[in-house]
Image (cartoon, rainbow, N blue to C red; front, top):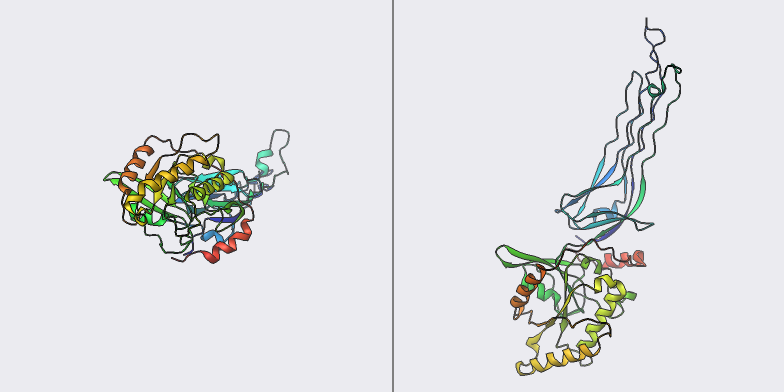
Length: 372
């Protein structure tokens, strides 16, 4: 099944039924008076978070949802039947916003959370509501009001405590395999990760946190290079970012410090709020460096990284050295991350900037989407 994390849908709540003007006509009951009933309310459209759903694929191909209208009122004081509400089940972490204005309608951040996204119309009044001492035979009634109609943007943002950043082949997928039971694809070519992967890291029997691995960024991603930045929204809810750096790149022209700065620049172009999150450096692939040269290589990287820091940048980030493929250094890092998470507040819902040319990239994402 393809991983679909964006969809556009149209929802229309039901119109309210019309009230009617009717009069009681019964043998031996002269001037029976008005008995027109009210119309029923229109059906509303609700969304509910369901942890058993992982993607928005159901809304990629079925895009229009209509709730039934309410029935018209009847005579003999009969009210019309209300329209049935419809409930759309969506993955936990789905953000629903109005397509045209970007107005946030609902953030389904917990399992079972239910939100009204389109209100059904009210039923019209029958003529029984207009009778009075001076108007004993009212002939007026009101129509039902129309239900809400909306074009909606659905965006799935995975729920994770820690997010992994880095260039393609920096070892993010290998790292998440080393610290959790997740088994994302790992290969010796770029962009092996085509959709976010989640892994639960168990520190102790009752201590755990969730890590999110997103496809790698490259320089120019904000302009659409590589897979672009369309997956960065999945890091919006994280509390801590781990920036993985390949300390032993195969290309002799590669500069790990320069590449690390390039990723930070792309992050800042996408969202200053996301770039401001706590971010630690994780220097990976120490196994490819002779043991006697490791300390020197790490020191050289940190010096070059600090030299290219922005003038207003705060204290240098924490730095860890690991070998993800063997797990060396991963356990102390995981324990440190868990202790830090206990002190970091849970973030408020973060609305990241909407990307441009989404339609053009949707086709590309479907073609590159991996089937499971």
